[in-house]
Length: 457
Image 1 (cartoon, rainbow, N blue to C red):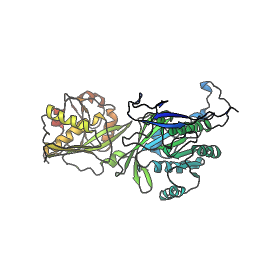
Image 2: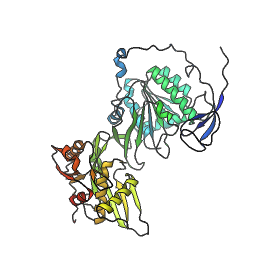
Image 3: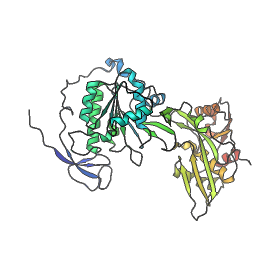
Image 4: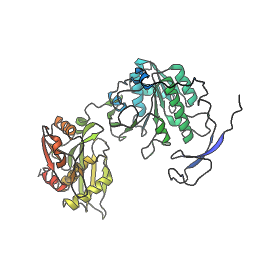
């Protein structure tokens, strides 16, 4: 046996994972300053984990067995929707989200639904076995069929996966895992890259799906280098305000399905509950005839959701008016305020403006522009918009109302919830042929404000 190669020292960028033999003041890849950290990197063993394997042989594409396309349903419809129909055997999935948002709860509930098909391995690197058991008991989940391993060494985890051959493995979290072949601390760039690569190898080799729970930074991205997202097969994000009950599950990468689908959950005492009718839930407490309240049929992936947009406009008490947006893009709100003043003749320069999307949702779709503008105009005039109408359309800097995508699906959702009118862009009106509700086409923002039905209460 040849002598082992000595470990080497490398300087690794903590933002993008760029590897350099010497320290650099500025990363040539991500342009970050003072981001390099010295790490000792031991040579990787043959096959990463030292296990000898027979070399794989290429086969024709049409001879791939049909079992490779089978999916394992999790029993949670909203999660299956985002995954593309279920869990693909041998896949590596990364689930990210803010602390306390419900990542561990969601995968614990999925483990309880999947255990009927075989054993489930739940690896906890942050909590003790007793703490995990307490959480499972709070959700009404007994321990049968779920193997619990409190471990942070990735080699031990891989050995347990090969021994138990589970139908699902959950690693909570990837930032706590470490490999003995890397000398840096857990959570570093080299450790994340090495641990994710070794788990990917065992997932593909043993045909076992592995879910990784990942922490996020204050900007909302998964902590660690982007290479972690490149290694995995799917990247899911669980979003929502921590003090609101609703959670949105999105996919930003999915090699086995679409990234357009979203799942909606509600946090309860027994964990995350699926929301079958999110539009009805978001509008159930909506007040009718309230100035500044407007409903928009937004599109989350392929699912239309009706969201209430609220605006409050009051005279400012200071020289500089305040602008606050919760759930909407503040820069977009400021743009709409300028268009309202220039193109519609509504001056809000001496008023504080507060915008809120009910339910803790974050919507960045340009089709909500018209609803935001009408809500602010309604609040300024202290007159309620037509409570039977929905508003949607993108607004340009010239004040024109531009067309939106998938208008028929949005109108069907509005019609299902009892709305009777829809203020839509004139260019999209022809797409609404056959709609049961009244379609009111508008060409610009000024016409939309006039046709919005703003009347005295």
